[in-house]
Structures are given as C-alpha cells and as structure tokens.
Length: 261
Image 1 (cartoon, rainbow, N blue to C red):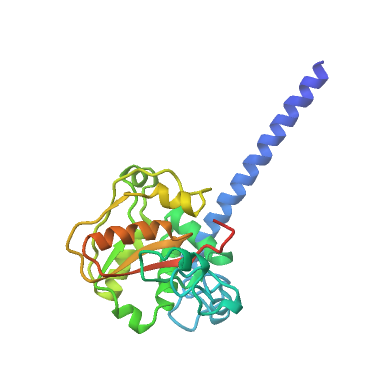
Image 2: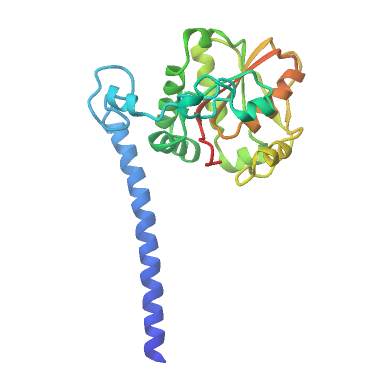
C-alpha cells in the first residue's frame, strides 16, 4: 500500500512538472520572439532574413502567405479555383447587409499566429504587420472609397476583461493612413461567444446587438481583425444602414476558411 502511494505521488509530481515545463516552453518561445523583434529591426518578421525595403517581410515570405484567392466577391469566403468570381451559395441564398468585403488573407499558418499574438497578447509588432498586410491588399480605389470607419465594438464587460480592443486599434491607425473619420458604434447586448455556433445561430445571437448614432455619411467601412462567417459584420452593417449609411463595406485582415468556424 505504501509503495503504491509513493508511485502515485511520484506520477502526480512528474505530470505537474511536465505541464509546467510545457507552459514555460511556450512562454519562453513568446519571450524570445519578442526579444528578436526588438533586437533585430530590419529583419523579416517571418524568417528573420535581412530586408532591403521598409516592409516588415521579405518578398519570399510575402509571396508564400495564405492569400485569400480566389474568394467570393461579396463576403470574401475562400473558394475553390473553379468558382473564381462567382458569388458563394451563402450570398446567393441570403445576401449580407454589407455590399462587399475586403479581406486579403486567410486565417491560416503564419497569419493565424500573428492574429493570435495581436488579439490575445496585445502585441504592437504583430498589429503593425497585420495593418500593413491589410493595406497591401487594398487598391488605390479602395483606399479612397470610405467616408468613415466603424470598428466592430466590444461589449464594455468584455473590453474590461480583455483590456485590449483589436478592431479599434486597427481602425485608429487606418484613420491615420486614409484620412477619414472614425465613427463610434456600441455593443448594447452582451452576447454569448460565437464559438461553436452555426451561421443561423450566430445571426440570432447578434440580433439588435449594435447601436450606431444617426448621421453616418453615405459610404462606410466596417473594420475587424478576422471575419469568420460574417455574421458580426452583417449585424453591424444593418445598424449602420439604419443610421444613414447607404453603402457599406466590410474590411478585415483575415477570413476563416469554411469548415473551421
């Protein structure tokens, strides 16, 4: 009995030690990544190669990023090559309240890692890279199109818990690049998480979730970091139209491929 108890105690301590080692390994990798980014300016954020330009990436890594092509011309959902230029089935069955989405990348590989560091660790370097990638995916006509930017708002409780509002962070810096005003929106319902919900459940979860003050200009762009099914941007687009917007586009850095919602 005593021997069995000793074995159980040893096993428990070993398990806890392994868990602690794994956690320390993850934290160490994150810390090293931060040190490298500060200590090696002028290096590619992805492979650390020397950079000949002002961009934070090298040409080879930029080319290999998971670009969102082809994609639905309305909601930017990733599509197979044979469907290039066609509206997806979701947009044919139920068109979104926004007119068009601009989402240059897919939420995958290196882009997913950047988004997670930006969203959950509030990494300014990751945020700057994501902002530049979004701008790189916009044409000159896109950049001159918006008359106002509306970031997807967090509910006040969630904003306090997280301590960081990634959509507003992006929108504030886009405002500086594009020279158009930022318009506030409120999340007036503390909705449950969208994780694990299908499209219909996501739309129901967001009914009357947003309020936007009257007097929006004619052309408005909604801003978020990641677009999953588009339900959040759809609900916010509806509120913007009720507040006076006539044309609404949705901009995000990355789009979640179908099947990973």
